[in-house]
Image 1 (tube, helix red, strand yellow):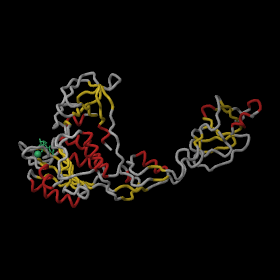
Image 2 (cartoon, protein in one colour; image 1 turned 90 degrees about the vertical axis):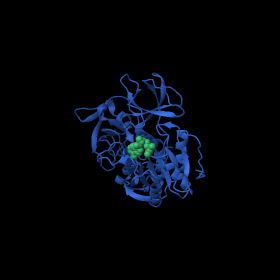
Image 3 (cartoon, helix red, strand yellow; image 1 turned 45 degrees about the vertical axis):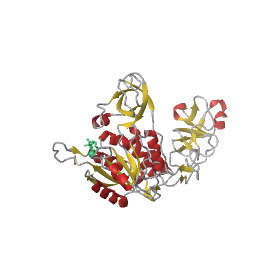
Image 4 (cartoon, rainbow, N blue to C red; image 1 turned 120 degrees about the vertical axis):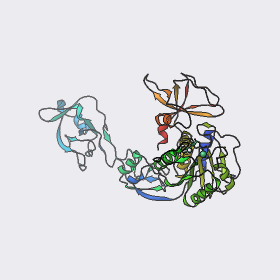
Length: 420
Ligand code: AMP
Ligand code: MG
C-alpha cells in the first residue's frame, strides 16, 4: 500500500469491498517460518511449495475387488471356456507376474500383476464348477487399473506456498509420506477492548455496565485463525491509557486489534489517539453494521510500524468487521493466498426498508422447505443484537438506498466461509 500515513485518505465512508482490497494489499507477510508436524499444521499456511517426493499411486493397482487378466487370453479361450484363477493378490502384496492363460483374484489397492491389462469387478464375474471365470458385459483394456503416477508425478508441485492447510491438504501430504511441513509463523496480535462500562463475564453487573463480549469473541476468532494473542484487557476511555497500551503492543505484537471507542463521539478516543500518533489510514466503511472501522499504524512509518485494526464496539458490528475486513488482513500477514468472497443469489422471504447511504448485511437464515433457499431474518437486526448473529446462516447484502422486496433476489454471503 502506498500509504501517506498521517493523512486521512478517506474523508467520506469507504466502500466495503474497496476497504477489503486495501487491507489485503496492505497486509505484509511476516517472512518467518517454522517446521511443524502434520498434526500441528492444521489451519496454518504453507511457507514453501512442496514437491511430490514420489509417484502417486506408486504402482499400477486395482481400483476394484475383482479379477486381473490379460484381455487377449480371455478372448482366446476356446468355446468360451473362461480362465482359471491362478493367483490371489491382496493389498500389500508385491508385484507378481501373471501366468499366461490364467487370471488373478485381486483386491482394491493391490498391485496389478505384470502382464494383466484389465481388472474386471467381481460383480460381473461368475465362476463355473472348474473355478474358471466368465464375464458379463463389455471389456476395455485398462479398465479399473489405477496407473502409477496418474495423480502426481515425482518432482511435480504438490501444494504451493500460500496454501491454507486444511484436512484434505494435510492428508495429501501424508499420502505422499511427508510428516513435517514448513509453515509461516503465527501472527502475534495484541487485543484490547475500550470502554469504562465494560466488565468481565462471570462478575456481577451493576446498572449501566456491559459485559465485554467482544474480547471473548475476538479471543476465540483469533485462536481459530491460528494467531497468538496478547490480551491487554479493557482500557479506560481516556487517551493516556490507550497510548500506553499501544506503546506496549508496538514492541510486543505484529498487529493490534481493538474494539470500541472508534466512533466519533466525545468519549471515543481511538481515532484521535491514532491521529496523534500520525498513523490513521482510513476511518469509516459504508456498511451496516460496521461503519466505525478504522485502519492505521501505531506511528507514521507504515512499512516498519505495527498495523492497527479498530473494530466497532457494537458486538455485531465488531463481528462483521472482523469477518469482512480484519480476517483478510490477517490472512495476508500469514502469507495466505487471498480467497474471493463466496456469494450466491438468494430470494428474500421478507420486505424491509433499506439502509440509507451504506450497504446493509442482514443476518438471515435459509429456509429450504420449498426446495430452493429463501432468506428469512434471523432475528432483530440491531448492531447490538447478538441473538440474530448467533442464529444466522449468512448475510443478505442490500445496496445503499435499496428496499428489500419479498420474492426478489439479493447477494447472499454464507457465514461458514469465515470459519477458516
Ligand atoms: P462504542 O463503540 O465504544 O461507542 O460502543 C458502542 C456500543 O458497544 C456500546 O453500547 C458499548 O457499550 C458496546 N460495547 C463496546 N465495547 C464492547 C465490548 N467489548 N463488548 C460488548 N459491547 C461493547
Ligand atoms: Mg465506548
